[in-house]
Image (tube, rainbow, N blue to C red; front, side, top):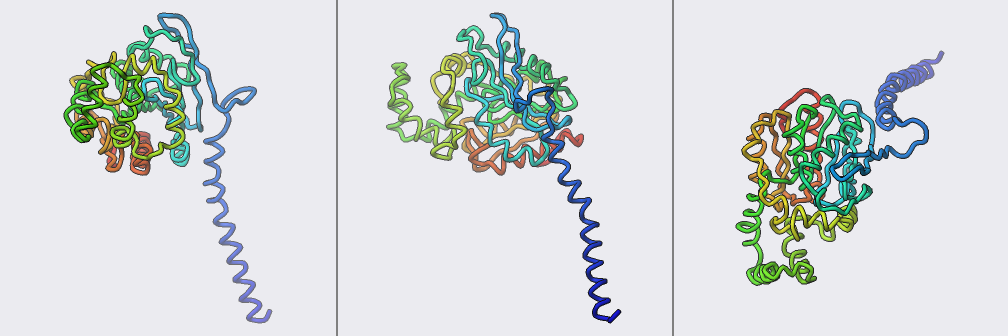
Length: 350
């Protein structure tokens, strides 16, 4: 065989060998996706939706859940805020958690979104919601070996309260953008955030509040640009899932528990304070806050120091909706925490 032809043949053989050697790696990487998206339902497939029947003091009702992805080791149940919003503002998770192989579960609490709305304020109760979460956990077969609970805003209160009673069922707890003391939350709004407003704007807001004229369009007209756009979500107009979710908020539930607005608190939760009990939490905890949050970021940093195994993530460009307005920081920290706990770490270095 001529020397040039022999060299060409050897080069071609080398390239084919290299291609064959790399093929198994490509197949291995691709095999993870089918495992994550494999169906786990019997019979007709319905996109991972499971309606969970729950028992309450006022009878039985149905709440809506939807699983996204499949990972037996990492399952995150999402508790929406409001109170009374919907799971929909968590849709941004779809762009981040699947890439890390983390399964997550949308869930509309009773009175929210796709779940039943009994229209009974007696059911808008923190202890009752804790028992609802426990019934959902059992129905979805979540265990201490795979169950991560993420609560945002009001959902953070619910997640913390659940953990105080049922932390033996948890693998990890994420308290997102929520203080552990509503009196402290009210003080922060009055003594810090209110003073950042223009004096004439604050004076008019206080006049409307004194008259309890919360239905006056002027009230939200003042809060939207002067408070919400600064501290609730700094992306204006808000991302579509946020707008869609908040547009469906259950006002009865919201006002009963929170009060008429995000500017402080005056509902059933007004005196809620769990700071003294934080040392009782031994489960790994991630406390997330934002520099421009409606909540005090230093308080949320403190949470991580009070629990036994705490990690703090303060988003430097984030507000109450840090999962949108400081998204990369939020999602990088969240996924690193879950993956770290999955590997056995109790305190995760972010």
